[in-house]
Image (cartoon, rainbow, N blue to C red; front, side, top):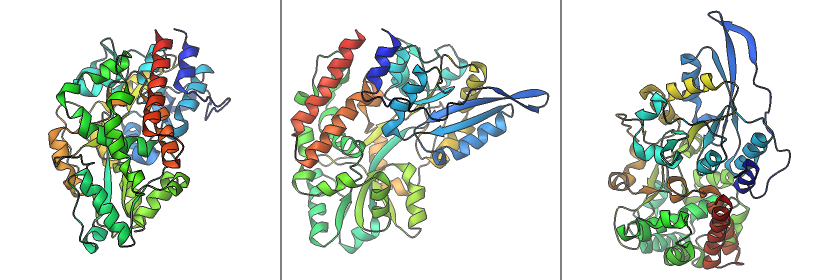
Length: 423
């Protein structure tokens, strides 16, 4: 398969010439202990603030390496990355997620299988970034999303954390009746509805052991979302039918939704730990909690997440040895705890344990049960393009121009098209 074909698949709407920070990777004249300092470019879709402590540690541990971190929001990350790779101006180190397997198949990523640091991670953390037993990226901390809630608003309205989806819908309606916006969502992005709806799929579909082979079958084109997920996503879509999510939210960005929640204009907002610092900066006195997405039956609930993003090395980097040193440092307990300090999550490095704190107390049951999953990052070969197609179609569902079934069919069509092209 030609690289160009896969690159086009990775970003269906390529933005021509969207190169960011494509300066040449050259050595500076600055010297540390008689050695030249090598500049490495790291491209990521998590903001630099979520990597600050980690990047500072790399600077201390690798005095002869200077890392230029470049942030590109996820909505445009694949466009920018693939434009750069095709132009031969790709970064040295790439933050990868659901697109990792496609990039590896296109021979853009360095094989890390035999590197000593790769063996320090547990298998579930490496699986999303492996193909045919070969490892192409090593995991950073896990990621997860649940539903943040304002504890003070809940107390004022005599509302408890919901244990079932019916309760979730019911408390949302109660809040609305009391003049409180129950949930705000930055639906200008295709991500939040996609993730929240899959929270119901986790509860109602993936929790059933009979469906454990579904994702492999989906990769092979032998199973369809529009058939297997339909009942679960229809259940989730009650938040649209009941006007808990409203059309005006299609005009809200992530930052606008965060601001509404942080300033007490909404009782709930779905996101992850990376948002906590900003929320508390806007409202230091806020009583913040997070609960998992509940299912139809009472239980521990599910969070969206799992192995988070990972670091891969551009196979065409001019500084592979230095890039490997970065991944070696990353595979230490000190670096893992530095990552978690700015963006809460668990570590996949063997022997490292992390205390997430009081904010996530309502989610302890889900964590202990292992109820944290995101199929597009964990197993799907064409993960990101599929969920992007699905998420964008859900925006049309909220707008009233598509049905849930049509949104799932759009995701199936994207998966089928990519699978056939890769054959």
